[in-house]
Length: 106
Image (cartoon, rainbow, N blue to C red; front, top):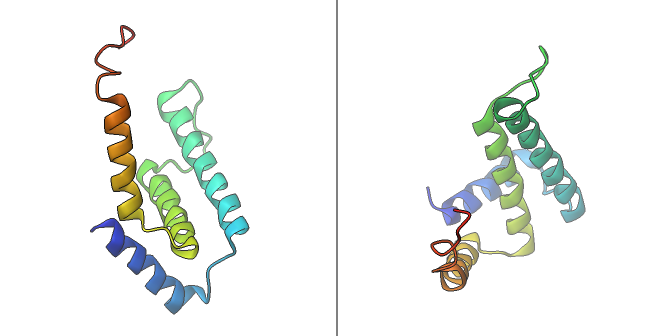
């Protein structure tokens, strides 16, 4: 699936099941909440914290939740994620093409 297809699929789902998009501020708060849930799973899976018996720990599902809300925000603000990602990759490539190879910390 392409990013463009994902944006259309989310939009179709919202129109069929979701009634309407939550407003941008609500979706930004939800995105922050979802990132926090991912951070919790990462901290307990790879860090020093342990899971509680009531914790869920599905890393892929938490990442998908973040992607869903990000796509919602892109759709409602008119961002073409395919184009934005391509431009961002070009920017990173130009800016960092030798940076990491010359980093003694790596």
